[in-house]
Length: 391
Length: 101
Image (cartoon, rainbow over all chains, first blue to last red; front, side, top):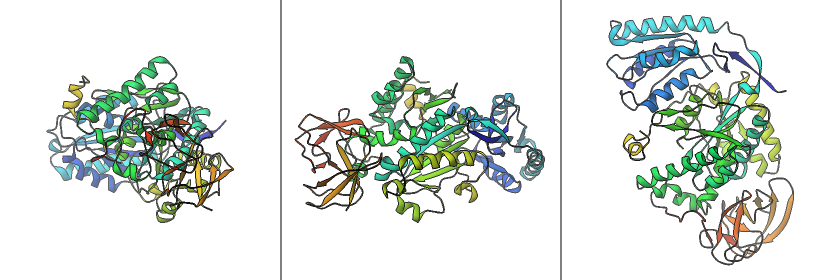
């Protein structure tokens, strides 16, 4: 049986990193939060840019990433006059059993005082987490996000099939895999629904993709389905475009749809392959899969990407050997070796699977070693959601 | 010789990653492993685009990734360029203005 080495959390989940998360619930307190995090080993600060109201999509994502097993301790760092308060997040996070502290700038007698306290809190947490030891765990404790972006003709030919093969291996070993980007599934609902574990899941898949079509059509964005660039690049139909994207999720049965609607955010209830109703925008898409518990992400790109992530290590894969040579500082795996005739598809899938386990057990990805900590939160448009009857 | 890649054994199209001129011969390679055949191109096919590896009558299914990606809107012969001029989506006609990638 395959294993990885991780850190057990109080709630029984297993982290593969020991990040200390500083959450500025609103961007008003982000700059001091970032400076606090910069002072302490292992700390990372995040925020969101959707205003200071308690937008439930934002709250669910921030709470979800704080609950992610890669987070060993949490410092909430608010301004004081926002509706999306520290207390609101604190209530959602208490049950995780993780060390969690809260500071509000307007109540601490000023920014510098609050920052000073914040640094001391994180310093103590950093010392505490340095004593945690990795232990062996089965893959039933591992959840992996599959993402694609900056696609080119090699993405559907090599990178996504190779990652899909690794996804199948992870699922076969008892792991969890999530793939998202509903806009990238349009036109393939009948194909995905065939793989649903039961009729309800099949219905959910149709519903999820069809309501995304409605969102785009309602916003007069029907043209987003296929771009001129897609067609010039050789993609003939929406089915062809989406098939290339969904390949990254592999071929195993789909356990269910993880809804990410205005006030609903699902997490997997068993291992296996899951679909998240999520955005096609890369960094927030990874954030939302991390909020659903993935400890690691595989990211395929044809043209190349520098993306890392604040919560999860990101393994980057390209199907384009030229891109790999140009961006070898950023990209971990060259699936272009398949098209060059140097490696088989199966060999590259095995390489990716092995790299997932090595990364889970502590090896840094290229983006991590460079200190890249991208983070963003996506929110839907409330008016559109209301018109669709989702809130 | 330049290559065209067949992804799934059921596929009746293969994708090229170089620009291929009329009358050039391409080797059809399976991503599952092995060389399948050599085909002489009837039309120029640019990088990222597809060519037919079997004849397809009008109304026949075009298969890539082992799945139907559309229907032939005209007769397509082996070695023909396969794209929006001779294939239509089963699900949605193409609208391109202002689209995203």
